[in-house]
Image 1 (cartoon, rainbow, N blue to C red):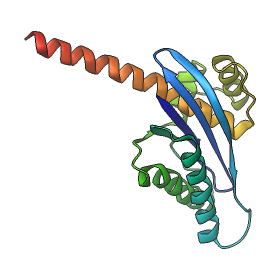
Image 2: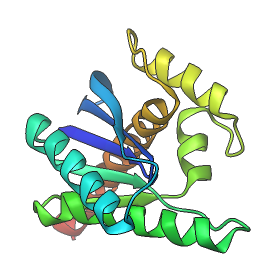
Image 3: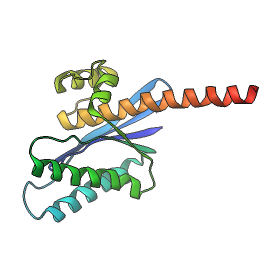
Length: 170
């Protein structure tokens, strides 16, 4: 299954594409959609939408996983991040992809084993789990989101098959 992980940001949204087959994960590509730092907000959001759309069109993932946004002390920054998150959620959903959200602590715990891991630790584990990966911070975070989803989706499928198997035996 081809997955895209997304780390939302208004100026830099990280993206990472992996192929997940059973326990095997393979790095496909990663990068950042960079948006102008100034200009009308609507134009910047449209630029983000088009950039993510181009990535989705190029790699044709089957599902998208997004890091949930967090609230910080600066209300204006939080609002702008929320708008960017809306675009990041909308873009794959508009193309018919299932979209899953994960909190940052769960992503870190899934990849590093510790929910309060530092960015450096996350990037190091991404490189260990996906050998040959060279990713900048935002792209490494996006790959971590994709890895988290791959692990959780595999577990959900295993549980679902057990429940179905149990019901069939009744």
